Image (cartoon, rainbow, N blue to C red; front, side, top):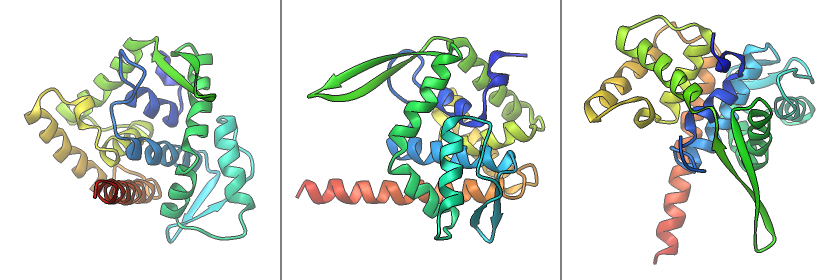
Length: 228
């Protein structure tokens, strides 16, 4: 048993996305933001707090024991007068993903995985997070690699994490070299299509991919427009 066995899916996703040596991430902002919210929704789905009907998210409860962040998002879904599909919720919550990510990072700090430095730039506060338990991140990467290399059957938690890796295109984090990354990409696509991914989880993963794609298109169009 490793220390990361005590982490929820959201914490594992952030740990995986973090740079091992620098205060930054190994994936794009769009993938990080949508991935964070998608992971929280997956956690809540597995906790049996959310019900997915025809892509519409419905809260079965107003309280989650996972974290204050999970509880906050669940409460907002439960209190909403408007029904939204998974993609719309991911897009809506992604707009405040920085606030949610800060809380998740503070949870990882309290568990001894990272350290946080609180900074200010022109009176605007921000944080820099650094990995402490680098080996635990490596253990997580190796667990994923073993499944993909030896075609091991993942448990429900790891199957969800594999879905996160595929949705957020985290191939460079787990693959060593172009050939292996391409091979892992193909295997991950097969896993997503198989019955290894639980019903409901696969819907969140697909909608998360759609939300990331949409966010990338918007940012690309904004950058193109600004360069004219």
